[in-house]
Length: 100
Figure 1 (cartoon, rainbow, N blue to C red):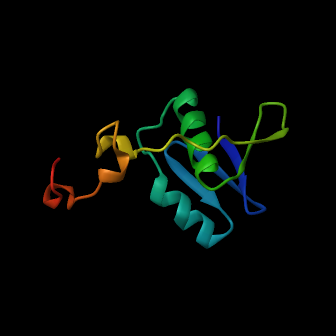
Figure 2 (cartoon, rainbow, N blue to C red; figure 1 turned 180 degrees about the horizontal axis):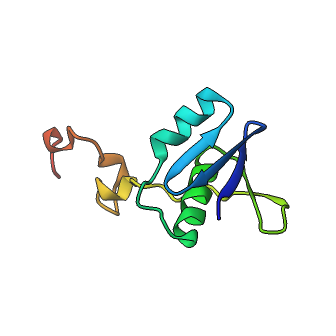
């Protein structure tokens, strides 16, 4: 079953790993995020929820009501690169700093 989302007042549909939308610029943005592996209904819904959340959009429920999509969690965090106690020491040149 296709999943509908609304971003910037334009509607888009995700089905079988492909996005369809009347607005060319929105379709290009969504195709950049498209997951061709999303084949089941649950995977399609999860991907559409992610895409709508990335752009601050809405997702249609089964009843046809629109609800805001939650913003997805960050894929990269500062703690991935910096020690937990001193996040200000993050960066790719951190090895040049003096250690105390």
